[in-house]
Amino acid sequence: MIRDCYIDINKLVKDKSIFKLFRAVENHGGTLRFVGGAVRDVIAKLPEHNFDLDLATDLSPEEVVEACEEKNLKTVPIGLKFGTVGVVIGDKVVEVTSLRRDVVTDGRHAEVEFTSDWEADASRRDLTINAVYADEKGNVFDYYNGIDDIENGRVRFIGNALQRIHEDYLRVLRFFRFYSIFGRGEIDNKALQACMECREELQQLAIERIRDEMSKLVMTPKAVETLKIMFDNGILEYILPTAKHLDCLAFLIELIQKHNIAPDAMRRLFVMYDPDEKLAENLSARLKFSKKQREMFIRWAVRNPELSEFVDHKGLRKLLYTYGKEFCFNKLLLICALNKHEPENFDEIVKSINNWQIPEFSIKGKHILELGIEDNRKIGAILGKLEEMWIESDFKLSEKELLVLAKDMVVSAA
Image 1 (cartoon, rainbow, N blue to C red):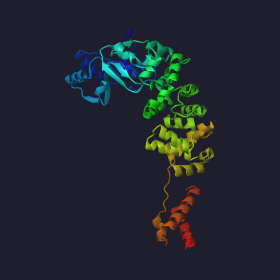
Image 2: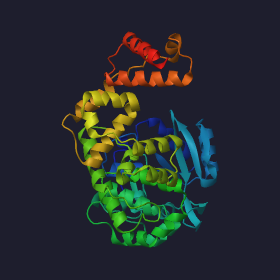
Image 3: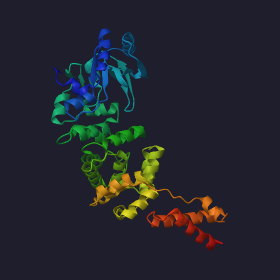
Image 4: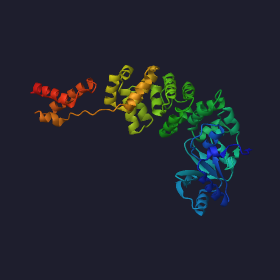
């Protein structure tokens, strides 16, 4: 089905130099169309942003390269064996993928062959809403009623749901992610039943794929509602423990929206579980977090200041000095969410976290050496006590005052 001039191409394309690529493919006897997410999002009238453009063509990868060479367009061999050629347009690389049909699938990988059949290419995609194509004039090519489904908030698989999932088990998680973004009304029962039937097969997937998909899912508009469906139907029990704090996740989402704070997937995953150190280590290992992510996630679990410390000005400065701004900002949000409580001076606390200049403790080991102490253990103990006193003074003790206190400690230590 073709919908003539159905979308405003200007909402899809910001850099018009991409049309050089259309001319190159056309001059080589081929057809080029935008496909998938960007087309879907424009039809759904999502807020405008710089879409990641994916393109499909009936030329083979080798023919795409030849077409680009003829028009002096630079190509990048980013996935030739999978049929994808990267083409440099301005300061970006757009991906052009040759039409494909599946030959063999095992739930994790697929063997494909190239084709010139657009409907065959559409049939191998997961959901009807993702199988929409558009040309440079805004004509939309829709082989599985994706437009109607987008406009009516229906999220469903193309053809037989079980068959689509058996081609790639990650489609279980993708289905729920797209339902959370585009779904309205009851979830598609055939899709839900198919996902439940294939839930155990999620264990076959590389954990990195699961982690990346879950990180996207928790950022979606209806994340709480969707995750509840998934946990209630045992969809995630083979890859993740049951989340017991979805109500706290809902509070966190409302809080950051209210205060225009950028969302963060790691915070959302943490709030879902409120893990102790052992569970935080388990989740970090299971989801293969990066070293930095793992350290941060576990630190959130181990360090547990009270909300009252954030509310108190002196207490907040002590926290900032001890843990740093990034930790304090994130921990404030986590504590508010897990307690489902927002302090009245929340904005003031955030402002203080962002604006306070963390001071530097000026007394060093050399100062204690100059006072006649050479034992490293005693030097360390004196420095620690001085720093503690400095912090308790709300960082008001001057270097001169600290050195006077240090002299008294040296005398006592003699």
